[in-house]
Length: 467
Image 1 (tube, rainbow, N blue to C red):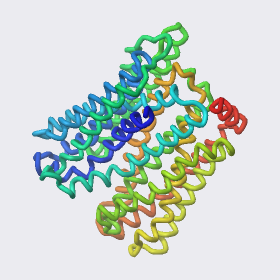
Image 2 (cartoon, rainbow, N blue to C red):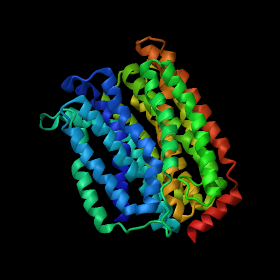
Image 3 (cartoon, rainbow, N blue to C red):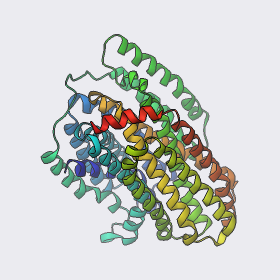
Image 4 (cartoon, rainbow, N blue to C red):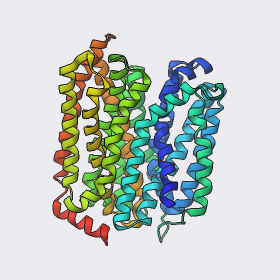
């Protein structure tokens, strides 16, 4: 019951990152929204979500994970209703930002609650289900959005993509109130407000240019903002180290990175999400504009990814008990094999490529993604003390969002550069063929990083989980 409630929250938070894209044409028509408005409808959610994830996780440690989770779900549900009934683009943008705040309060508590509630094989299974749910939310967002808009329920056009969250959220809040247990650290730390300010400034400086730079043509102020993000991050690290040394409560305890599992796991997570989000973004463009697939057939292509992903997510935690980090190595081998198979398939079939030929490599890539995510989460969090579960979950969840944003921005930029202004199906296919090898490089980099997690360390992690 506990797992079911928190997974509903994580599914809604991830789904709403992706579901809105299918509604943009309808929103433009019905609300008279301009291009800048549409960009903000998408990015307002992701930006606020990314900025407050670490703070949201820490608030759970301080105030009570149940209370913050239910508060976040309540804010998210109210914001979804506001978005669904928004009379103007400005109200919709504001509602999307409020949704992002609710998601940032809610989502980090999911990993924290799993970490403190489950032990041993139950925790491994819970993390596997969490990974599967997150993957389903990411992959099916476009499918669900397209289906709801096509059904045009009660003549509401795009509005059901937000309103669907309302009954789910209400049921989730009521169920959570009944089944979740209060939990927080034994000695509630104080909230590090200067740390909140610095990490928020860093994330705004990083995420805003990455989310909006491509569409705005990279003006000088946005490039400077992006450059500024790195010294701000350095200042945050120095400040947090000083705070820890003085015996004060930091927002992020830098000692977390002394755990090799955490220090290596966060870069692996970033690589994972950069690869996955970049591939999903360019794959949609390739399928619909290059191959002329309808939204439904394009959605079925993503369903092939889902088949491999869900199956591997559920198998991964069981395999890691026997094979340790070799499961993560297998994951990146499968990802690389799937990407290589996509390249061979493109070279063989070209513009005549159908879903039938594309399905096997997508299933293989999806399996690699599934074998990576759920064991990776277990490895990262296994070395983290329960009293630091919230801040660790906030860092992990923030790496999800940074990876997503970097992946879409980086590979969107590459893909459009390779298109070079051409709009023919052949140009879309050629651009995708040129982009895929870069995903291969990232998968190989992930494979090599896994070797920094020693097998001896993996065995220690497994024994601790079983204990």
